[in-house]
Image (cartoon, rainbow, N blue to C red):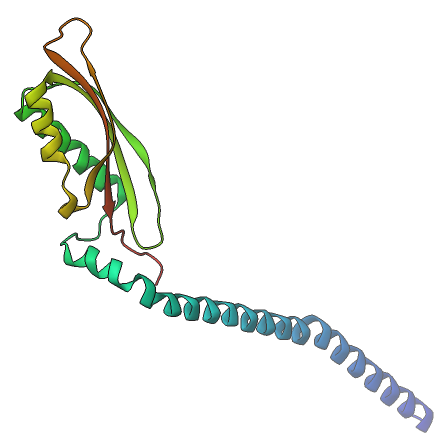
Length: 177
């Protein structure tokens, strides 16, 4: 091999080495750097969000402590709605009220607690209906009657028809960890 061929081979080797380094830099190194920068930006966003939650903790801590003190275990909205509906049905049956309609209303998610709602229509004697209303309005258990419509029953004036919307505040299990 002549001197000229050796120089040409060395030049081609150096050129291929530079081209491979350039391709490797653009295809492997730069995307990894961009991914790391994006992860850093996302981490900073999460940190700012956590700092905001920590700053708001003092504002919401008394409400959260009250909810926890009142004895409610964390539950899912569907379970709470089902239990609320069952309680209303049992209380109405115990007072010999006729249940006309029973519907679950979509729950409303909140920041610290969720609100579940149930709509009930019952008919019965006035004293029985008022006894039922008193038994289902339980502020200590965060269960209140938020809407109520009372009217006399069309075919029997000794009985009344009541439509109530009962709302319960629950603490939901937080799946984000």
